[in-house]
Amino acid sequence: MNWARFKKILLSLCMVCFTLGAVSVPAWAQEGSGTGEVRRLDPANKKITIKHGAISELDLPAMTLVYLIDPPLMQGLAPGDTVRFTARRSEGGEYIIIHIRKR
Image 1 (spheres, rainbow, N blue to C red):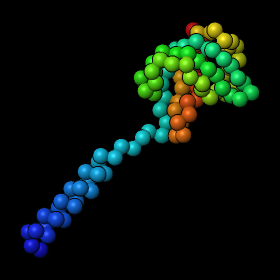
Image 2 (tube, one colour; image 1 turned 180 degrees about the horizontal axis):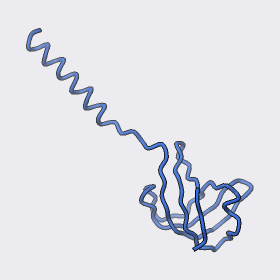
Image 3 (tube, helix red, strand yellow; image 1 turned 180 degrees about the vertical axis):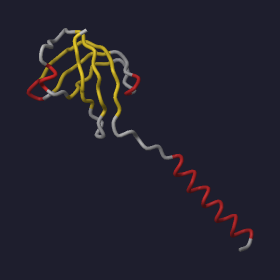
């Protein structure tokens, strides 16, 4: 094998390695906890609206966001309640409350 061909093959391998290393693989699901105020409950559509502070684990700034939630988790909650909650971001980018309690 001559030197020019060896350099070409080596350069190609380096490019492949760099490309594979530079591609980030997103996490399938991420979880984060926060505190906020319940703004709206929609058990029929399995949704809850919460005005919350920043949730760094999910890269969410302070905002009001509609989360998916299992209706039994909403029992005992009402608009205006201050809550502590844990949410998960699904593979599809939806935010789902997996734990919630009044503060």
